[in-house]
Length: 281
Image (cartoon, rainbow, N blue to C red; front, side, top):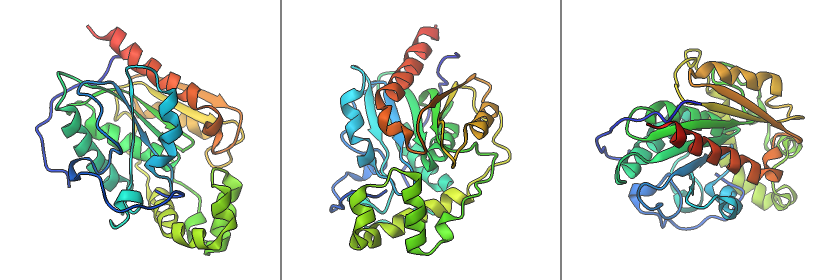
């Protein structure tokens, strides 16, 4: 595998759901990266959640992160401490803001800060677009890990976001990954419907025919063997977005296979960080 993609960047001004909502508490500088900032220079795995997901989805992952590596969950607007903010209008809008914040954050470290971007489902598109923006711009981008989503050159064919509420929730239940209490309680479904529908809408609209060859770092695609939303045959298309090498790993399970393979995914991410460090001069 090739080493990290590096560069420098001048500071610029920074321009989820199925969990409880809270009042705004995060400082303006770190609206997109949830939680306390890692120590300067700490290698980090930046995790972009699925449609309707939030940073809290990755809370259980924290205990499985290797020593010396920070897990940085991404918080989309319209949920939790960002509840009062309007939902994002496009995948690119999320990537613009996240990349700006991430670059400003890692610029405070001593030298280059190793970063791996991970995204599941819609988060894979967010992670890819963020990777395009940070590669060579100041972050030491070591690799991109995409999970359960077709490549950016492949149009999304799902129309779940256009269904009436009850039918949309029925379809989401079939995908897996939705908490039982949300499916069982109409009050909770009503609360979470706007965020999920907004995310599904921008995910369905995202496509970029010119995405191929836009990265020069390793890309690893992860897929559930029985995922009907992002079949393993489609996941191979991710190979074309980079000149930095491609690998694919499949797991037993459906669209939310990752619930049972957190340690495997984090090991893959930490291996990318380590391989990039080993390849550095």
